[in-house]
Amino acid sequence: MSPQHASVPLSSARCTSVNIKGEISLVEIFMESLEDTIGVVIVLMGPTGAGKSSFIEALNALSTSGPLGIAKDQLEPVTADVRAYQVHNVTSVWGLYHVPIYIIDTPGFADPRISELQVLESMKRWRDACSTAEKVRMLYFHPISDIRLASRKKRCMDVLKSFWGARNIPTVTLVTTMWDRLKPESRATAEGRFESLRDDYWTEWCQKGSRAIKFENTYESAIDILKHVAQMANRDISAHKTKGYGDVKRIDEMLTVEQLLRERIDSLQQRLQMIDDDLRTLADPETEEFRQILREDRKDVLDTLARFSSQLEKLHPSPLNRATRSLMLIKRWISSRAASDVL
Ligand SMILES: Nc1nc2c(ncn2[C@@H]2O[C@H](COP(=O)(O)OP(=O)(O)O)[C@@H](O)[C@H]2O)c(=O)[nH]1
Ligand SMILES: [Mg+2]
Image 1 (cartoon, rainbow, N blue to C red):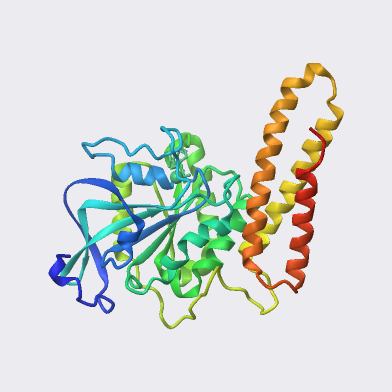
Image 2: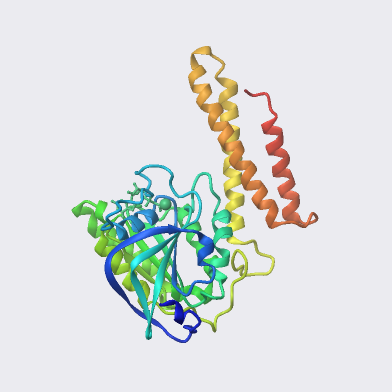
């Protein structure tokens, strides 16, 4: 859309297609520059390694500037923060207008060092953004190569569903990846997994306008996904508006993202306990090299625990409830471990 049209309200219009003007390339921009955009903002979310950055690279594949270097097997740095890109030479067609397309790449869910809460924190305002209310779309990436839907990945989908909420269902697409990695003989089984994911775990959302699609890790497939995004419906303004980190079904229920964070803290505590037990039993000087690895691991776990527990603390600023009391116990436990002489 040209600047002179910047004040035209697009809320009543519906995006129907994309217009490709030339060689597509992505250029990183400041997140802040998207605050009052009139463009379509496509948010990529999903577990670490699911293929979000690969989708961006595929879209950028014909750029004469070369790869962006953001997918995991390429040079560091990988996605540790939210990053925004403008997609050049392609626009979304809204009624009579052509508007720019932007992509936001987010840190992964189920990442060993980043909590899902931290990812949601950075995305809350995009879900709720006013000026771009009709034009935020979300692609949730899921690797179809996973033999079964691991409970961690299922929980991540629960977090996503609770966070994006009923109102935004039509704007969300489940993008399955890794299709090109399958051996020909595994394709049929993967198709079965895709169908059961779509008709089982994603069925309620499909009935309300969400879709499940495939990404083949090629430029053409990435363009097809852009075209698909162009045809997605706007958010359903008759449905209730999700606030904060997501919906809870009952008033006394915990947020899914908080449950997950507590589970992750719990398993980190168990891991630290195991490391400490190993460090105590491995007294032999021959094991020094291994002890050094354990010490580094221990430091990593302690740092992550400290970060996760302070994120949990921010969720519960009030000092007098049950959740805060259990948090105090967690913090006390972490401090005692940090100060222990197991080294
Ligand atoms: N062959 C293939 N590799 C993929 C696909 N998606 C991701 N990968 C690979 O999986 C690794 C992690 O992908 P990345 O895009 O960085 O995941 P992200 O954490 O979701 O951004 C990289 O080595 C990618 O090359 C896919 O659809 N096909
Ligand atoms: Mg990435």
